[in-house]
Image (cartoon, rainbow, N blue to C red; front, side, top):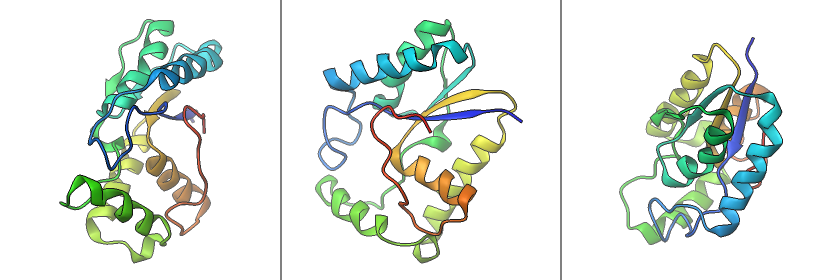
Length: 159
């Protein structure tokens, strides 16, 4: 059975409700370098990233250290918000974060199932550079916890 490392992206240059796809800020780039250094001895291994700028930038030091090209996997991208103004996304996310999975609608269940399918298809050790809500969705499934958010992974933490 493979070991899967879920790495949350580094600190973004803008909040989720300010910029739809921000890259990393200077601290986020440093966090990415430190995370890659912490896992360097475990590699090289498959490197998978969300298509979002902050995850692709977080994956760069891993790819450089292991001389591997990250594979972009859309199924491990950020939780999809309904069509709304960018500024409204923060309130929407805070509202669903306090719920349980049974209270969420079909599009969010499809997203969660896609996340789980992407990880389940992995046949060898891999690093997945992804998002806060993705990591929570995976742990909810593994632990049987019905909460949408059961813990708060820090930037560039490894789960």
